[in-house]
Amino acid sequence: MTTLPRSMRNHWWWRPGWSVGRRFYTWHLTFEGQHDVHRLAAEYRAGLGPLGPALTPIPDRWLHLTMQGIGFVNEVAERDVKAVVEAARARLLAVPAFDLQLGPEVIDPEAVLLPAHPSEPVQDVRDAIRAAIGDVLGEVPESADGFRPHVSVAYSAADGPAAPVSKALAALDARPAHARITTAELIVIHRDNLMYEWEPYATAPLG
Image 1: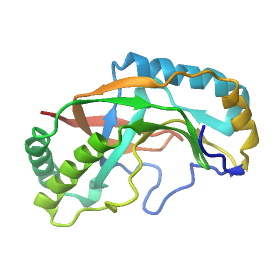
Image 2 (image 1 turned 45 degrees about the vertical axis):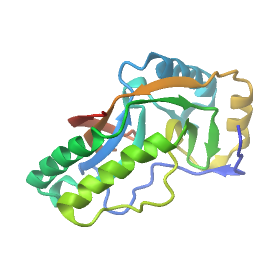
Image 3 (image 1 turned 90 degrees about the vertical axis):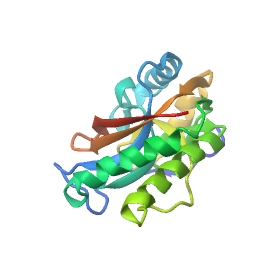
């Protein structure tokens, strides 16, 4: 563990533009079939479980590494989304598949995070996707700066001190997980149920 904020805050406040029922096109890395990632997430769910409703542990199916948004479903023409997919597939053929280590954990004021190492290949995937969006839409939403690739294993669901989270994590002996990244996924995401849930839209294989 490398950082410790003094307090936690509720992650589930409504960001601008978001509300129940809204759907959003975004590129993520997801972890279906990544057994070592699921092993580690289960260890965190067990270790953080005693904190109860103060944290929202992430089930295996919703583990993700946030990459790059496109826009809300009702604000982006589907023909443009399909064109972005084709442009991304072409660009990602030049990005090799790669291995990641997830962890050790970091406590953020709104989540328990597993930083991704090395970060450079994840950045290469994001850069290719941003270029593809630019090819189609001209402008790319979200800043290119400040990207910290990570996988969240739990979100803070209440305001309160960080010390109980730190204490629970200190009792864990969690070995970092290995992941093999061979694709990027375009998904249609929502947060209606205090969880990031989605439907898959398209997959772009890495070269």
